[in-house]
Image 1 (cartoon, helix red, strand yellow):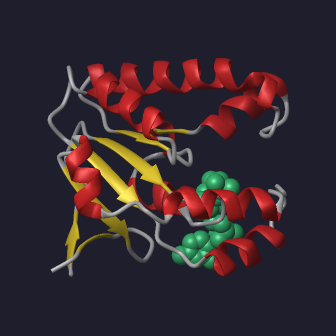
Image 2 (cartoon, helix red, strand yellow; image 1 turned 120 degrees about the vertical axis):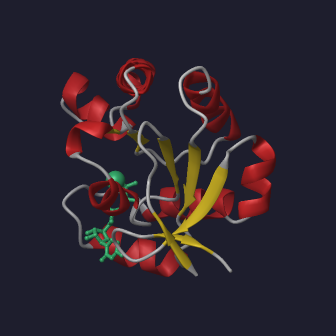
Length: 166
Ligand code: CTP
Ligand code: MG
């Protein structure tokens, strides 16, 4: 498989359950200020990354940061699960006026791996939530993502690499 760099000014949308390695991918691909996650925004706004009451504001904050960067031709990384097709469509709409580089990065990790990682982390995500997220991730494929409108769809590789399957 080919290793692919992130084009300047691209939107990169990470997709995968909790514990699938999205934030690890984000840190390996872009500067910290390029990354905006909904959990992080919930934490900043409400003091708790799991405070669902802050979800709407966190979504607005995430979109504001991503759009602000893309408008300036700076890369932007959406670090949230993005398992909901509507969440992905909103990110596509947000970025389209500013860049042709709309990259989806699917994190395909066995649910057992996600569960094991989550169990040893500081921020606890309940196992039933991870199982439900894994079920929603399962039907996602790279061709399916391209059909949604992404200019490219990759699998997350080892840290720092996007994999273009041969
Ligand atoms: N991890 C790992 N090997 C990888 C990727 C991640 O061991 N290739 C570890 C990370 O060090 C971390 C855990 O797995 O302790 C979860 O990875 P993270 O990137 O934080 O997962 P996210 O998808 O960002 O999880 P969340 O949605 O909960 O933020
Ligand atoms: Mg994360």
